[in-house]
Image (tube, rainbow, N blue to C red):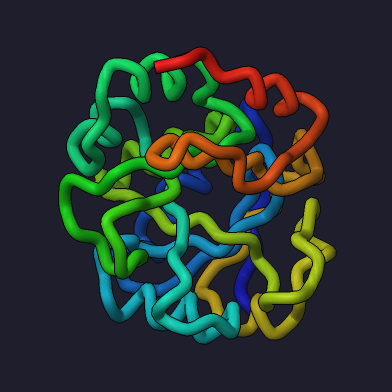
Length: 204
């Protein structure tokens, strides 16, 4: 089983340093977001993406979402217009995944779209900023199993396959993020009650 470190919203700097080193070595982490616990890895590495797909039990056709540090990183990797920018900046950071057009190729998806998050989590934002590249964010469970809202709910097989587990206690929302496709302008998956207002997106 992977070594475990504990963090809080007020004390996470040491966790950022260790997690950054793990990610830089092409290994994976299990970490808390604001929604559920995720499997994280370097989203720019084919090798890392393959590892995550193996753990999840999914093939290369199924895209993986990523978390980004800030809007500058989103603008670097994604092609957005004024309407998309308004929506993204209104709801992020938060428990949402927005599907956007890719500007630069990433191995997490085989098409020209990508799901992007900025979790409402000081740790996640600091880690992504320190790492300097998009980080894979997919729930820390094999496909078909429940997404865990605390580290104790993560499957042992997942923990055995990563280099580090980060325990931040129960997540804030306890359920997966809402997924909104801003390319096709549709709700893909509803999240917690706090996300229902996304159904009333302003017209472009």
